[in-house]
Length: 417
Ligand code: 2M8
Image 1 (cartoon, rainbow, N blue to C red):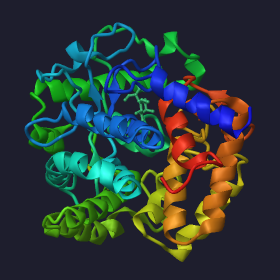
Image 2: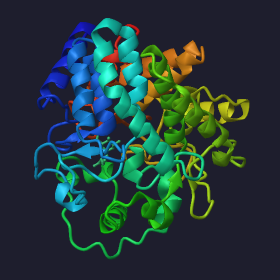
Image 3: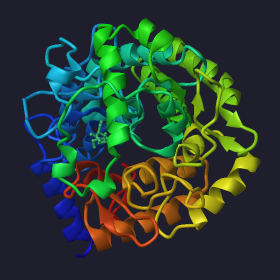
Image 4: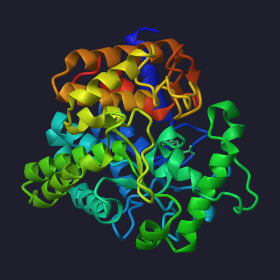
């Protein structure tokens, strides 16, 4: 397929996964609206239908909780094909939602869409601005209690089973969760998904949240899992700054997001792992570092954080594979080239890392990452993720965020979207 055929195929995927105002990640495997997937979908839509892009934000914020949280899944319509569904989460929200959040890429991509299409966007952005502000305040109050941004469940990070979470997961007791039937392994090969021991623990953490009525203070104080996440910290840091820029563009006061960004930046030393010479995930209950390099550490540039020591380490990780940034260090014993977030290259994460390189004037690295991602998609199709060593396409096909980042960033026809 040439570029225009790939562009057309990507647009077809977005339209095909559109369920009427919101976009599912892929049919079968993920039949609901996922938080960060949806924001990438909006970025993709903005390349050919700006209005539809903003509608994606509206449906996402229709699930916002009274305390400001924007949940990681919104269950607009029941679908038996996914576990755990709304009855398992038991959040009591309307529309039904999960009880955790997901990486806040919304302010950053909303700003990009707005700046590329100011006239068609201003009114729509003004509508969601207070919702973004409330969500960012929620992050500050409920996830930055220890300084850096923390996750209370591996699913909250979006990088579900990456080795970053191994120390925190080791202390979660998954032995009493009862019987349940997974649906994911009915859609894709089990060797590409998290294992049963992981799932038992995912459910145990979920059950803790449900049993305390999703009381955030209780979850932070006594929940079974609490880890600081470099990726979340970098994503939130940039998002606060982008939200401040949005505030200024709309004539609003930017002091809250600016202050939150300054505090988050000051907390970065807490996730600096001296032994690894990199930013690293850290168990906030024990202080233990994960001691493994992954794509989260590569997001430093995205938050305008540079450090000559980390640079050598990260480039060696990237050079050890052929296609894009691996989700985990290929030299580590935990590396697994096709198992989801334990090694594969994710086009969607590559797009964020490249945005970081580009913003820091590192155009060679940005271009290399784009080229490698183009190769993956051109040879393998719009899959969820890829083996970083040989480029094998893995996970779900016709995947929304892969199509979206193709249109907005990877495609040779993509402009400054
Ligand atoms: C994956 O996560 C979900 C749980 O949220 C799952 O495995 O069931 C992750 O890749 C996550 O980052 C993504 O948002 C979601 C939908 O694509 O799938």
